[in-house]
Length: 316
Ligand SMILES: [Fe+2]
Ligand SMILES: [Fe+2]
Image (cartoon, rainbow, N blue to C red; front, side, top):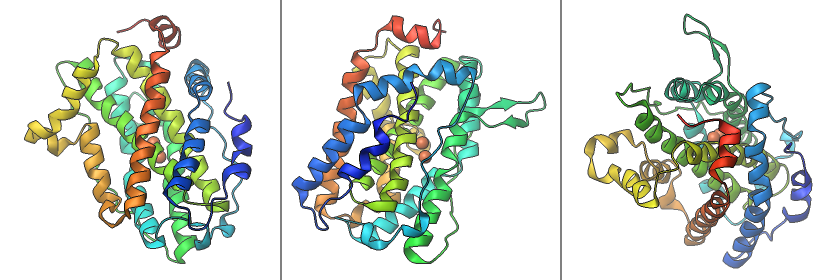
């Protein structure tokens, strides 16, 4: 049930790729990371623990990190300047977490109060936040961690300039509104999982140790949101899913929202300076995204409606 198994020992065995790994070495490294961190058992455990976290939310503690040991030599297989540009992009994407969590809480509130509390915390009658949700407590560690990495690698401090989070848009059909919003959330958690795991394969030592904690958090959240989506919208066929995703390219109003996987990926490629990536970086990142999606897909095919109802209750 808890997330403290053999994963903790993992970096000691696979964290030392060659200084100039080739495509195949990187791909091998990525495959073992994905198979380990997204094993079926691990994904099951992340979903299974949800009722306990509804009742008694406890953030997962990080392993202790030797921040002063982070250095440039721990970046492998990627231009350090591109690595730093990606880092800045990730910092800008992670913030502003408070707005993200409160928007999601509003979409969930009427439909699934327990998950609303998990993401957005407890709210007083006057609308003020009494206690942040578990999702926020875990996510709010990410921006400071990335800022510390940047400062350690460059000797410079940067002030994040986060993009503006989309606010809650009330709708006549809250179920459909939650569907569109939830898809965007899953896409973001999935993108973050792919990115941090891919960066893990391009780092060693203390730098990799930080990225491991970020990766584990993102996998945890992605798994829970994905499971909720399967429970809430079992009627969604792959065709409907594609249609929703492709709406970004058809409706101008939607491309402004960017509330879909494609919109998220479009924004990510810009923010992460994709144009400066070497072909090996692009190829291994595409491999990472594909393999993680395959893992999620085969795991979700094994989840029965009865099992999901046991976790989330009767469907709205
Ligand atoms: Fe995050
Ligand atoms: Fe996240």
